[in-house]
Amino acid sequence: MTKTGADYAWLEEDFPDIAGAYCFTLVRGLSPAEVMSRLEGRPVAPLQGISAVVDAAFTQYDPEEGDRQLVATTTVGGWTLLIEPNGYLGVTEERAVPASGGTNWVSHFVNINGVGTFLWAEDQVLRLCFDPMFPEDRWGTGPDEVLDVMERIGFHLDEGTPETDLSSLAAFALAEHLTNVAITPALLQDTTFACATVQIR
Image 1: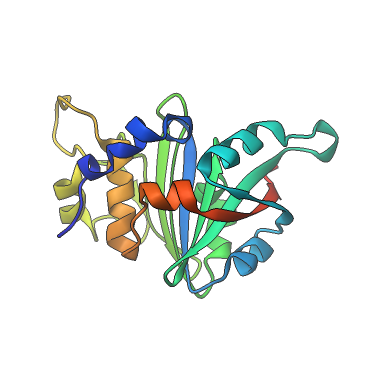
Image 2: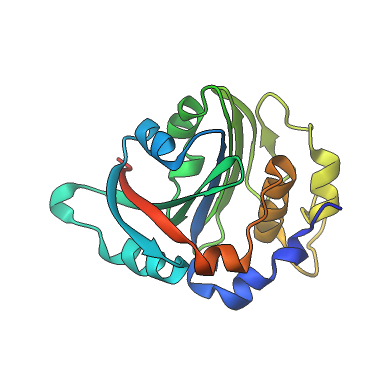
Protein backbone atom coordinates (compact mmCIF):
# COMPACT_ATOMS: atom_id res chain seq x y z
CA MET A 1 0.00 0.00 0.00
CA THR A 2 1.34 3.40 -0.98
CA LYS A 3 2.26 5.57 1.99
CA THR A 4 1.07 9.16 2.27
CA GLY A 5 2.64 12.31 3.61
CA ALA A 6 0.88 11.67 6.92
CA ASP A 7 2.92 8.49 7.33
CA TYR A 8 6.03 10.68 7.57
CA ALA A 9 4.66 13.01 10.26
CA TRP A 10 7.17 11.48 12.69
CA LEU A 11 9.99 13.37 10.95
CA GLU A 12 8.81 16.78 12.17
CA GLU A 13 7.91 15.43 15.60
CA ASP A 14 11.03 13.35 16.31
CA PHE A 15 13.75 14.98 14.20
CA PRO A 16 13.03 18.74 14.14
CA ASP A 17 16.70 19.60 13.53
CA ILE A 18 16.68 17.95 10.09
CA ALA A 19 12.97 18.43 9.30
CA GLY A 20 13.27 22.19 8.81
CA ALA A 21 15.85 22.20 6.02
CA TYR A 22 17.24 19.21 4.15
CA CYS A 23 17.88 17.41 0.91
CA PHE A 24 17.33 13.62 0.73
CA THR A 25 18.57 11.80 -2.37
CA LEU A 26 18.37 8.15 -3.42
CA VAL A 27 20.62 6.80 -6.18
CA ARG A 28 20.09 3.28 -7.54
CA GLY A 29 22.87 0.72 -7.99
CA LEU A 30 25.86 2.87 -7.03
CA SER A 31 27.84 2.64 -3.80
CA PRO A 32 28.21 5.73 -1.61
CA ALA A 33 31.82 6.03 -2.77
CA GLU A 34 30.76 5.88 -6.43
CA VAL A 35 28.13 8.58 -5.94
CA MET A 36 30.62 10.78 -4.12
CA SER A 37 33.12 10.27 -6.92
CA ARG A 38 30.58 11.56 -9.43
CA LEU A 39 30.04 14.62 -7.25
CA GLU A 40 33.79 15.07 -6.61
CA GLY A 41 33.25 14.62 -2.89
CA ARG A 42 36.07 14.82 -0.37
CA PRO A 43 35.78 12.11 2.35
CA VAL A 44 35.58 13.17 5.99
CA ALA A 45 35.10 11.19 9.21
CA PRO A 46 31.95 9.05 9.51
CA LEU A 47 29.19 10.16 11.88
CA GLN A 48 26.70 8.14 13.91
CA GLY A 49 23.11 9.30 13.78
CA ILE A 50 21.42 12.24 12.09
CA SER A 51 21.91 14.59 15.06
CA ALA A 52 25.68 14.33 14.70
CA VAL A 53 25.35 14.87 10.95
CA VAL A 54 23.28 18.04 11.46
CA ASP A 55 25.74 19.38 14.04
CA ALA A 56 28.69 18.72 11.75
CA ALA A 57 26.99 20.30 8.74
CA PHE A 58 26.66 23.59 10.57
CA THR A 59 30.22 23.60 11.95
CA GLN A 60 32.33 22.23 9.07
CA TYR A 61 32.16 25.32 6.83
CA ASP A 62 35.63 26.79 6.27
CA PRO A 63 35.71 30.14 4.42
CA GLU A 64 39.22 29.43 3.16
CA GLU A 65 38.04 26.17 1.57
CA GLY A 66 35.12 27.77 -0.25
CA ASP A 67 31.49 26.81 0.14
CA ARG A 68 31.26 23.06 0.74
CA GLN A 69 28.23 21.00 1.72
CA LEU A 70 28.43 18.08 4.13
CA VAL A 71 26.79 14.98 2.65
CA ALA A 72 26.04 11.90 4.78
CA THR A 73 25.64 8.62 2.89
CA THR A 74 24.63 5.04 3.52
CA THR A 75 23.42 2.02 1.58
CA VAL A 76 19.73 1.07 1.81
CA GLY A 77 18.97 -2.05 -0.20
CA GLY A 78 20.18 -1.47 -3.73
CA TRP A 79 20.25 2.29 -3.29
CA THR A 80 22.58 4.89 -1.82
CA LEU A 81 20.94 7.47 0.43
CA LEU A 82 22.45 10.95 0.61
CA ILE A 83 21.37 13.39 3.31
CA GLU A 84 22.32 17.07 3.25
CA PRO A 85 21.27 19.13 6.28
CA ASN A 86 20.32 22.58 4.96
CA GLY A 87 21.58 21.51 1.53
CA TYR A 88 20.29 21.38 -2.02
CA LEU A 89 22.95 19.65 -4.11
CA GLY A 90 20.73 16.66 -4.86
CA VAL A 91 18.08 18.79 -6.58
CA THR A 92 20.51 21.05 -8.47
CA GLU A 93 19.76 20.09 -12.07
CA GLU A 94 23.21 20.88 -13.45
CA ARG A 95 24.78 18.49 -10.92
CA ALA A 96 22.10 15.84 -10.42
CA VAL A 97 21.10 15.16 -14.03
CA PRO A 98 24.67 14.48 -15.28
CA ALA A 99 25.35 12.38 -12.16
CA SER A 100 22.31 10.19 -12.95
CA GLY A 101 24.03 8.55 -15.94
CA GLY A 102 23.16 4.84 -16.03
CA THR A 103 21.08 5.05 -12.88
CA ASN A 104 17.97 6.45 -11.22
CA TRP A 105 18.20 9.63 -9.10
CA VAL A 106 15.33 10.69 -6.83
CA SER A 107 15.81 13.75 -4.65
CA HIS A 108 13.76 16.24 -2.67
CA PHE A 109 14.65 19.39 -0.79
CA VAL A 110 13.05 21.99 1.45
CA ASN A 111 14.53 25.05 3.16
CA ILE A 112 13.54 27.01 6.25
CA ASN A 113 11.30 29.25 4.14
CA GLY A 114 9.29 26.28 2.85
CA VAL A 115 10.75 26.52 -0.65
CA GLY A 116 11.20 23.03 -2.05
CA THR A 117 12.05 20.91 -5.07
CA PHE A 118 11.35 17.31 -6.05
CA LEU A 119 13.61 15.95 -8.79
CA TRP A 120 13.55 12.59 -10.57
CA ALA A 121 16.22 11.92 -13.18
CA GLU A 122 17.13 8.74 -15.00
CA ASP A 123 20.22 8.20 -17.15
CA GLN A 124 20.84 11.94 -17.56
CA VAL A 125 17.22 12.68 -18.47
CA LEU A 126 15.08 14.85 -16.20
CA ARG A 127 11.81 12.95 -15.90
CA LEU A 128 10.01 15.05 -13.29
CA CYS A 129 10.68 18.22 -11.35
CA PHE A 130 8.36 20.45 -9.30
CA ASP A 131 8.03 22.42 -6.08
CA PRO A 132 6.02 20.28 -3.63
CA MET A 133 4.14 23.40 -2.53
CA PHE A 134 3.03 24.00 -6.12
CA PRO A 135 2.67 20.51 -7.64
CA GLU A 136 0.44 21.75 -10.43
CA ASP A 137 3.54 23.28 -12.09
CA ARG A 138 5.59 20.27 -13.22
CA TRP A 139 8.20 19.78 -15.91
CA GLY A 140 10.44 17.06 -17.32
CA THR A 141 9.86 14.29 -19.86
CA GLY A 142 7.08 12.65 -17.80
CA PRO A 143 5.38 15.39 -15.78
CA ASP A 144 2.13 13.42 -15.44
CA GLU A 145 3.61 9.93 -15.13
CA VAL A 146 2.90 9.62 -11.40
CA LEU A 147 0.14 12.21 -11.13
CA ASP A 148 -2.38 9.69 -9.77
CA VAL A 149 0.07 8.71 -7.04
CA MET A 150 0.77 12.35 -6.21
CA GLU A 151 -2.93 12.95 -5.67
CA ARG A 152 -3.26 9.97 -3.32
CA ILE A 153 -0.26 10.68 -1.12
CA GLY A 154 -0.92 14.29 -0.14
CA PHE A 155 0.05 16.76 -2.85
CA HIS A 156 -2.60 19.44 -3.15
CA LEU A 157 -3.52 19.66 -6.82
CA ASP A 158 -6.93 21.36 -6.50
CA GLU A 159 -7.70 25.03 -6.19
CA GLY A 160 -7.92 26.45 -2.71
CA THR A 161 -5.85 26.08 0.42
CA PRO A 162 -5.67 22.67 2.15
CA GLU A 163 -6.51 22.43 5.83
CA THR A 164 -3.25 20.61 6.46
CA ASP A 165 -0.21 21.14 4.25
CA LEU A 166 1.56 17.79 3.78
CA SER A 167 3.52 18.78 0.68
CA SER A 168 7.02 18.38 2.13
CA LEU A 169 6.15 15.09 3.81
CA ALA A 170 4.41 13.86 0.67
CA ALA A 171 7.76 14.20 -1.10
CA PHE A 172 9.11 11.44 1.17
CA ALA A 173 6.12 9.26 0.23
CA LEU A 174 6.63 9.90 -3.49
CA ALA A 175 10.33 9.10 -3.22
CA GLU A 176 9.44 5.85 -1.46
CA HIS A 177 6.94 5.02 -4.21
CA LEU A 178 9.60 5.53 -6.90
CA THR A 179 12.40 3.66 -5.10
CA ASN A 180 10.75 1.24 -2.64
CA VAL A 181 13.09 2.70 -0.01
CA ALA A 182 11.47 3.88 3.22
CA ILE A 183 13.13 6.50 5.38
CA THR A 184 12.57 5.39 8.99
CA PRO A 185 13.36 6.77 12.46
CA ALA A 186 15.75 3.87 13.08
CA LEU A 187 17.59 4.56 9.84
CA LEU A 188 18.18 8.18 10.81
CA GLN A 189 18.99 7.52 14.44
CA ASP A 190 21.08 4.36 14.32
CA THR A 191 23.07 4.54 11.08
CA THR A 192 26.77 5.32 11.00
CA PHE A 193 26.97 7.47 7.90
CA ALA A 194 29.95 7.69 5.56
CA CYS A 195 30.47 11.41 5.02
CA ALA A 196 32.06 13.73 2.51
CA THR A 197 32.04 17.39 1.62
CA VAL A 198 31.12 18.57 -1.87
CA GLN A 199 31.83 21.92 -3.49
CA ILE A 200 28.50 23.58 -4.18
CA ARG A 201 29.73 26.68 -6.04
